[in-house]
Structures are given as C-alpha cells and as structure tokens.
Length: 275
Image (cartoon, rainbow, N blue to C red; front, side):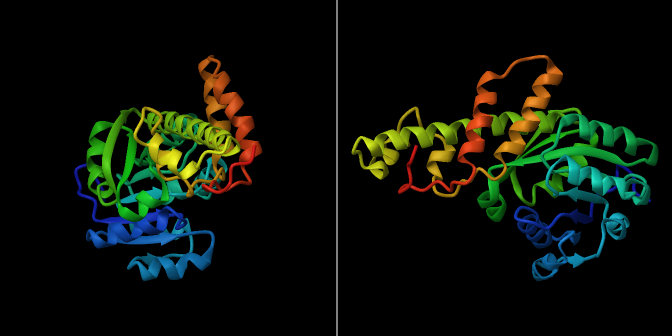
C-alpha cells in the first residue's frame, strides 16, 4: 500500500503524445519503472522504444504506478479519463499529477473526488514547449500540498530543470495561464512587427537578430519558426472563463483570443509576414 512517505519508484503515464513521449524517455533513463497508455494504440511502438511498458487502458494502468502523470489535452479529455473510474482503481496514497492545461476548478473538483479514496491530486503544468521536453529542460508549476509536491519532485526533475511550487491545488493552472497569456501576446506582437518591417523593405532576419539584443527580446521571437497557433484558442477560452470567475476584465486577452482565431492556420517563418 502506498503512503505519502513512500518514495516513488514506478510511474504511469496517461497520454503519450508530443509531450508525453519525451517525458517517458527521460524518466526511464533516470531509473524509474514507467508504463503508459494512450487512446491511440499507434503510440505503443514509440513508448516501447523509449523503454517503457504499454497497457491498453487507463484502468489497467491505475495500479501500475506510485504516481500517475496525466498528459491528455484539455478539460474534456481529463474528465473522460476520470469518469472511466480511474480514481476508484488507484491504490491508496497514489499521486495523480495533472499536466494537462485545464480550468483550475476542474483540478480542485478532481482533488475533492479523490480524497475519499486516499488519492492525492495535484496539478503540474509544464512550460517551454516541445523543444524543452526533448531536452529535459521544462519548467513545471506544481499546485498541491507541500509534502505531496516534495514526494513528486524527483519524478518531475527527470524532465524539468525548474520546479515551482505555486501553492494549493489549481494554482499551477493559474500560473500556466499567465504564461500562456504572455506567450500568445508576444507571438501576435512579433508577427505584426515583422510584417511591418518586411512591408517597409527591412531585412527581417537582420531585424530579428537585432531585436534579440534589445528590450523587445522574447522567447517566441528567439525561437521564431517553431510556433503555431494550434493550442491558442483553447488556452484563451480557459483564461476568459477564469477571468469571469474572478470577476475581472481582461480586454487584451479577449482581443488576443480573436487574433489567435485569425492567425491559427499559420506557421510563423521569417519568410512569411502577411497581414
């Protein structure tokens, strides 16, 4: 039986997509026993190649780990996983770390549901994107009880160089939303600035290199050419819902949500600056 004092040795991962696969590989290399599952059985080969085991469902995976990392998409996917009875199948003392980007309310509700089963739910959002996942240099915000967060840290340290305890359950989602608000605002501003430069006859590569040496420098500009708007609208929808719950207006975030819808089909490159 698991207890909060027990060191984590085995980790289950639900969701073996773009972020889940490198995370699985890092944990295996650091000596953890890892098993994974995904609704797409085609991910099995990639998981096994990275040295992890494969199970056909979240229910089968429930008792295979001292901690379970949930790396699915957004609220709907997370609720579907939990609605399938996962909490009832988990051993007492298991930690469920929600890495998905969801509404803070969702994580708090799951934590309340899990408590009678002796299961600890925390949110453990990650920043810096796919490149950092590959390199094992993600930043993780973690929301939960301090002793549970401490127990989880050796797992997170396999793929994160920075681990920030943001407070109670749900706060990691707030921190991730703040990160996303700034990231999408930077992407939109970069696009418009470089579009103006190109239309005005400036070599945009020369300009970008120069801007990276000024106060206008930002990570999205530094890694220009690797960004899409694939997740932007979902991120901004969560942010607007959070703002409504908090009773505050976020006018720039609202405008950026509309701009994200317009720009979503684009993949931003230095040779593409239409407006």
